[in-house]
Length: 152
Ligand code: HEC
Image: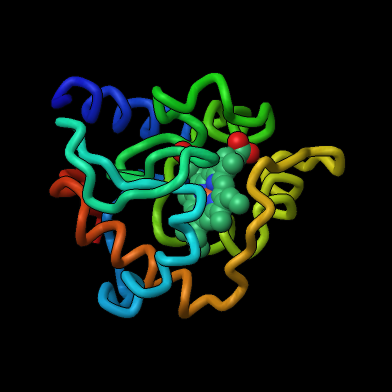
């Protein structure tokens, strides 16, 4: 785990315009309620397999999402769409800023980030209100592992 985090940071330093970063400015409590909308497709399950939020399997586990590159959750590897994997391979790690842009409109985010009008998203759900996204992000950070690479 330690190794993975360090490796991920290394990748971000070399290739990434954005860092994995647990920096959060929203209200985690409000975010917990909002996460009810995400549960249909996303669970939160820690590294030991302990379930923090029971959820659907349509989408990847969001535990520690701020520690990873886009499209890189192992258990979901075969189910990601090509576009999200490509975004991750371009060096993008989830942080508050990328997350807010992504959940506002996943398809538009992929199209803009890849500069490809044909990019497709497997997530069709949208959370357009920035404040909501900020709060959900804060919630995910609050239930996840201690972020090591905080950039202030
Ligand atoms: C109808 C199902 C569905 C709902 C509801 C949904 N998602 Fe998703 N989500 C997905 C799928 C499927 C993917 C994978 C997208 C792809 O591969 O293109 C995904 C991917 C993601 C990712 C990228 C994760 C990664 O590993 O790179 C984030 C972040 C995310 N969702 C957050 C949310 C949040 C926050 C909510 C609630 C506001 C939400 N999603 C609601 C289905 C859903």
